Amino acid sequence: MLSAAFTAFGQVFSPLLRGVLLKSVALAIALLVVMAIGLNALLQHAGTLPYPWLDTAVAILIGVGSLVGAIYLMPAASALVAGFFLDDVAEKIERTSYPNDPVGEAQPLGRSLIASLRFFGIVLVVNIGALFLLLVPGVNIVIFFVANAYLLSREYFELAAMRYRSPEEARALRQANAVPVFLAGLLIAPVLMVPILNLITPVYGTALMVHFHRRLAPVPGAGMGPGPLIEGRKASA
Image 1 (cartoon, rainbow, N blue to C red):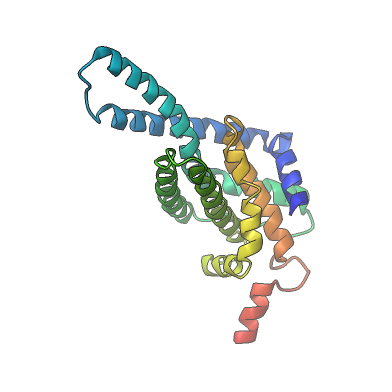
Image 2: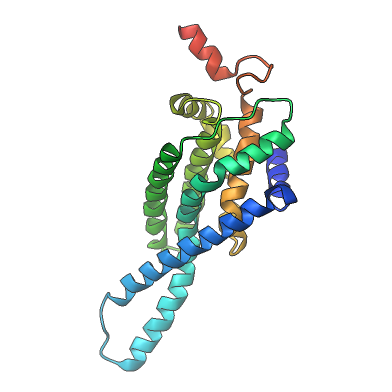
């Protein structure tokens, strides 16, 4: 698992994925700006204070809060950005790292966007909840870390698996390996906590789960025999 993480991290900054990384970062920044503006507008309309100096102090706090909020909104932006670039990242890695195996099939655009929007909504709600827990020291960090490790590992793994399996098979494979997949997510979550570096999350998370999926279960047609899920389906047939 660690070797997959190191390999993925190195590939993120390599010429192989540099172009996709730049496009992913640009889109993530655009989404963060839009969400931060929305959060800022929401806070500003919370009410007007009677003293100008207090308004100024609150405006400064809102500005700082928007920056902090951007960190908590990054996972949601990552979830949405992944839907646009996952297949590009996955195909490049599959062709380079696994040249003797078949390349996976890209998901239909509609299905990919629907899946990304669904995860975007879930991740956004969870992280806004974590943001409101800032007043509870320690608890919010734990919730932020664990929740995003679970949510992002679930998303990236299933999206990587669906290049070779149906959505139902990908979900079943993830559920059958829930603990290892979650542990892999723990290698994604720390990146989210580092400002600026967290912009690489969509590309890094995708690359990591492409490698992890390939090592967890042989892909159909790779000449290595059926994976665990395929065997289970044949046994039940």
